[in-house]
Every structure is written in structure tokens, then in C-alpha cells.
Length: 351
Ligand code: COI
Image (cartoon, rainbow, N blue to C red):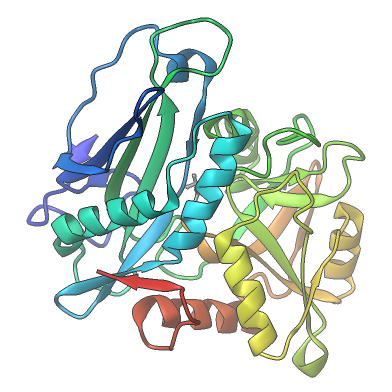
């Protein structure tokens, strides 16, 4: 881990999740006092008991949101209230006392006031904010903890894959599943992420960038990538439809996903939240019905999927490059991020 040094940073090769800003915001929860007000501090190591619940039993949830430069003196944070609401839903699922949603907004303001200046005025860069709620009681009884902590840290980042809309290749995970009905797949639980690493390693060994998760029951419905939602474009021109798997409990209802659904409707696209099987995806790519697929997420923004590999088979999506609908939606979203286009009411918080 390195702290951010604006003078030393190479902004052309900025790795995701490494260039932390100099401050963080913390708050604590106790049974007696509830959540304390958020406090700004220097970024620094934490001390913890070896018996901390979050470490042993994973009672930890988080969020990921971004802020973008707005002129020389301000940054604008994208949909922080929606991230605060999702953090509350995640906390509820993990039996963590929810941080008041206003406290997350206050924490974002404190950190951006202190460290917003670390974000250079360069296209493609943003501040990625990472709020986390974790159980920090020292007690290994198998019950919800009686002490919790909140942290907000930030790092400067470019794109998750690249700063340009370069296509990624994806690999269909068949040995593992990501989430089960009634499980934690629809919330941002820390433990949803590391179980994808084994599949992600398999994807890499097959020469691909990301794993595609199928539904856990029938193992045929496409759900999401490891940490990103998926969209498909069926048809083209005036008859183009934008399809994304429905958020029925096993995939994360992404805030970027929601933003794109909103923007697509404004672009005159027919939008459908409906299941798509892996067989349909392949057949409709091969016969040219589906000619674009892209991943969406706070980190990934809008990233085109160029090729899919499923065991020994592989197929190309459209031309294998970013298609026109993908680029138009990406541009509409980035336009809002950068202030080039007006944002819908309540989407931006400028600090
Ligand atoms: C995000 O897109 O913000 C995510 O949370 C995915 C991953 C980087 C954890």
C-alpha cells in the first residue's frame, strides 16, 4: 500500500486501488451510544484485536463510489445518497447497525473537502471512495458483534481495465457459483468478492479478463461478471433493445446499472430487464441478433465485452470492439460525470 504522492504519480499508469489520499474518515458504533459522528483523520494503519469478529467471521460490508473533478476548486460525487441507501441494505443483511445515511454524506463531504485537491484535472481520472462497515468486537462467539466501525478512504484511479473503452474477454465459470437464492448476492458483502478469485484465476488461465457468473440453480442464465453487471444490445438502430438480467436477488443491483437503464430510456432504447441464457447469448451473437455486450460498474464504468469463451468454445460479440450503443451510453454517463451533460436531479453532490 502506498499513500498518494501527486508529485510522483504516473497518471498514465495508475493502478486501481493503490494511490490512497492522505486522509480517512472514521466512526464507531457501541450498544450504548450508537454511531458516533464521522471524524476526519490522517490516513493510517488501524490497530485491532486478533479476535476481531470482522476478521474471523467476515461481518463486513462496503460500497464503492466515485467523485469527478469539477473545475479547479470542486469535485462532484456521483449518486452518494443511493450508495448510502445500498450500504444500509447491505448492513441490514449482515445484522450490522446501519450507519445513518446522512453520516455517509457527511463523511464524503469531509474527505472530499480535505483530499479533493488530490484529484488532478485530467480526463479519465476520478477519486474512488470506499466506505466500509465492519464488526470490530474482540469476541469469537457466533452472534452479531457488539462493536462496529466505519471507515471511508479514497484513492485516485483511472479505468478499472483501461482508460479507454477497450473490449475485454470473458470466460464462463462452470465450476463455482457466485450467489444463491436467499444468500448475500444482492448486497455488497465483502465475502462476495474473494470467492470469485478461484474462478477469476481460471478465467486468466484461459486467457480471459473476467469470469461470467451463471445462475446457481439451472446454471444457464447469465447473471453478472465478478463485480460488474452485464448488458446486451439486441438489434440495431431504431429497433435496438437493451437487455440486462433482472435483479431478482442473486445479482448486485448496481448504481451504474440503474443509471444506464435511466439514460437508455432517454436515448429512445427499448429497455428490458429479462433473463438471457448462455445458449441464447451464443446463438444470438452467432446469428447477429446480439451485436453488443458490455459490463457496467462504478469501477468498470462501461466496458465492452469483445469475446466470450465457454469451455472449448468461444465466440465474438459483434465486431469484437465497442459498438455504437455501448459508446453512446458510455458517453452519456461520462458526460454527466465530467459536467459536460446535465445530471438528473439528485445524482451529483458537489463539494
Ligand atoms: C465497484 O465497481 O465499485 C466495485 O465495487 C467492484 C470491485 C472493484 C470491488
